[in-house]
Image (tube, rainbow, N blue to C red):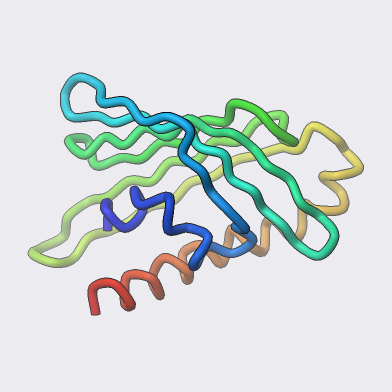
Length: 133
C-alpha cells in the first residue's frame, strides 16, 4: 500500500478531483527517505486550482507526509501511516487538515472538498484492488 500511495504520478487516474499531477523535483535523503515537490491541479465544474506540496516518502517509518508550499490554501497537511497487520495486510491511516486562504472560496468549495476527501479511502481501496487483485 505504501508503494500505491507513493505513486503520486498515477493520482489523476483514480483520485477524486485530481486533474493532473506533475513532480517538479525528486531527491533522495538520508536513511532511505525520498522528497518530492509536486504540483497538483484539482478541478470541479468551473473551479480549477493548482497547488504545490512537498511530499516526504519515509519507507522505514512507514509514513508519507505532505506539506503545503503554495496555492489557494492557508495551510494543507496530510499524513499517511502504514502499519503491517500480517503478511499481505496493513492498517492504513490517513489524516488531512486544510484551510482555504479566501473565506469565499472556502465557503464555495469547503463542502465539496470535504466530500471528496472522504472518498479518498474508497479511491485508494479500489486502486489497490485493481493493482494487487
